[in-house]
Picture 1 (tube, rainbow, N blue to C red):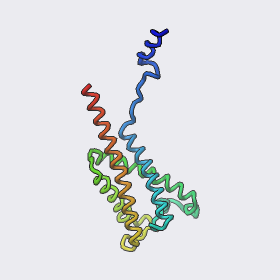
Picture 2 (picture 1 turned 30 degrees about the vertical axis):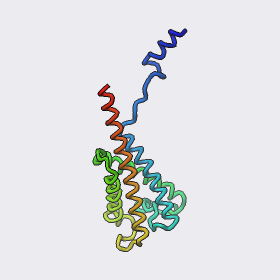
Picture 3 (picture 1 turned 180 degrees about the vertical axis):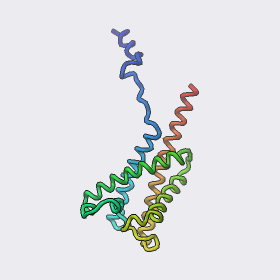
Picture 4 (picture 1 turned 30 degrees about the horizontal axis):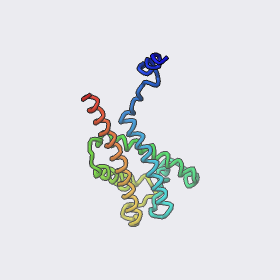
Length: 175
């Protein structure tokens, strides 16, 4: 019986002897984006709720939704979900363009770039976001910091995973 057990431990066809394939970096980036979008939009909603900012995550619904439901709890849930999905796209853009950089400042700059795109370029499609010159100082600083932290999270996480996968491949090749 002992020989049979030893043979089973060495048989690569058995499920218990198979190694789990790691998730690709693209898939990992999408998951990082989804989690980062959910977490940082929740933080943004809390900042709005505690009046640190005048911009609610619900602004994402303004161009597409009609009705008072978007101002209820359902609007909050749907807007957090939409922001998480949009965040996946932002993370994939970071993956394509900036994954090789290992400095945290690149992620912070990416977050501030996203802030600029939303508050300066896309501002007209979000009626509840005042023009940047009319936004109060607290909203301006809070929003910029949230975007910078979001960018830091996305950038550092994706760059870390890319570096880990590169090191793992180099280790496999050397053995």
